[in-house]
Amino acid sequence: MTTVLWSGRLPGGLDPEVKAFTASLAVDRRLLPYDLRATAAHVRMLAAQGILEPEQAIRICAALEDVEVGADATDEDVHSAIERELGELGRWVHAGRSRNDQVQTAMRLWVKDACDGLAAGVRDLAGALLDRAERDGTAVLPGYTHGQRAQPVWLGQHLAAHVWALTRDIDRFRSVHRRADACPSGAGALAGSSLPLDPAAVASELGFAAVHENTIDAVADRDYCVELVFACALAFSHLSRIAEELVQWTSAEYGFAELDDAAATGSSMMPQKKNPDAAELVRGRAGTAAGRLAGLLATLKGLPLAYNRDLQEDKRAAFDAVDDLDGALRALVVCVRGLTFDPERMAAAAGDGWCVATDVAEAMVRQGTPFREAHSAVAGRVAAGERFASPAPAEAAAARQPPEALALQLARARAAVRDG
Image 1 (tube, rainbow, N blue to C red):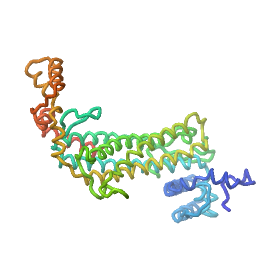
Image 2: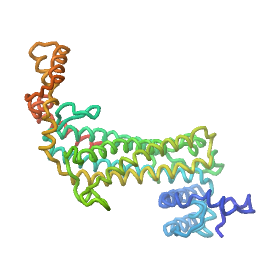
Image 3: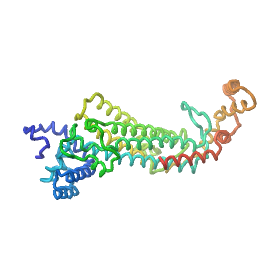
Image 4: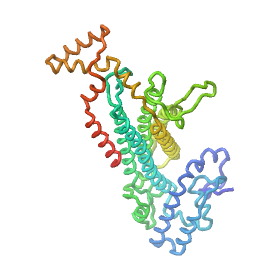
């Protein structure tokens, strides 16, 4: 039977049902490499401060390198598992710290890595969109408002719109990384420790930019987790827009593009089907991402300072948010890179004779007609069933954004993605 760290106070032991409900090892075992790093830094600091013998610290750090937590482990959490795996040496590692600051340190290390990984994934998707914009960007298609054909636009301009949204996602993940970059080690359970600790040494070894300012806040703060889940949810909203257009554009009704076989699935009953399942799942998981954010905010609302076990839920929300977004990004890169566009079908939709109605009205303005009169005159001609043969859709798109201006915008977008 695994002994829990607090068994000295409650020797009667937990009921198995309560133990199963409160245990977090199944979720937080992914923090193991981060917790091992933080524990080694803590041990070296204890030795430097004279709290541990140097030889003892060397043995503990060497043992930490060999720690593995098996799939059948029954520890309360990953922190308890590390102490158990250390055996007799484990009795020394917890001096001057609590699982409250221990988990925060490991979690912040994980969040920083997660932000870097997601930013790289967003860059990959933005790069795929820009590659397609540069290759197929001078195809013309209808831009839409209210789900209705509005004005002819370049395909490159449309794809770049998604890229600019993604650059803001990259910036948000960088922001979350920055706010997670303060080390809570040394805050203890909530009030620090009377031992002569050196939190700055631990922070420096672990690569943190700063040390906590307030021990109570250090163990209670989960803003960075909420911000991570928010950044994931908003990024998912952007991915869902892309996914929705993939679903629409690859349908027979639009016919603007076709998915590569590697990015589509078939039907178990209908032999003709080529389904955009990956895009649909991205769209669906965007809803889950939004719900996850609402759930975490509700969990944190009204919690008194400092630590409460409710905070255990931050890891489930953050881990799932990151995993889902990472998978969605990878899937959409495959979808975008394998797309085959149909320029003729897009041009035909843009050339319906009505998409250029605004351009007809603006031509009248250039000849001296007030815009409101021009708008009314053109609207009357549309209502009478007239379709306009001039300007051509490509001419209309070029009048608003010449091809050289489009190329410059794509270059700026690529620089923003690279430097973001």
